[in-house]
Image (tube, rainbow, N blue to C red; front, side):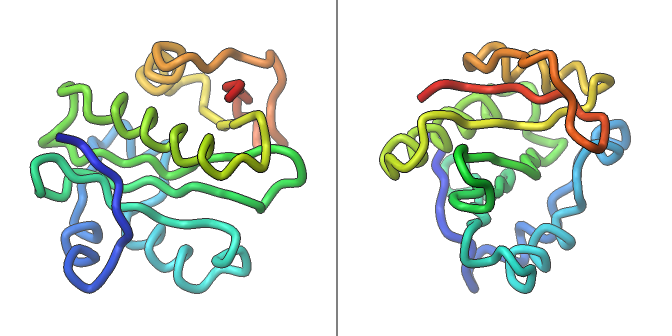
Amino acid sequence: MVKLSDINENNYEACSGLMCTQEQCEFTNSPVWSLLQAAYASFKDKSKLYCISDDNRVVGMIRLDFSVYDDYYMFTNLIIDKSYQCKGIATQAVRLALDIFREEKKFEVVRIHVAMKNTHAIHLYKKVGFVSTNKFSEKGLLIMEYSL
């Protein structure tokens, strides 16, 4: 069973060792960078990094941004270890992240930024219900939205 949990002294080392495929590394931050960013960045009180586990085994991470932006939630740095990809874990993790945002009840929209070349991620997000806004971020990333 896939679940999201706090990153803590029991799982941070496993999170730091997550490996994406070489192709995917182009599109996301490394797990170590994500851990450092969550611990020390200026938005650390506005974001939370979660461990993704499946049957009590660490398989990934995701960062949820609760109040970094003025009128929407955002998630970034979704990483599923290459050994656990293509098993539906990312789909379940995104749905769990959306549930967390729903429970917060602050905003009605979740946005993500995704590289146009990252066709696997675009497929995943569309499958979960995100739609393209046909707009691009300052970094040239496609902006997709989900209405809670």
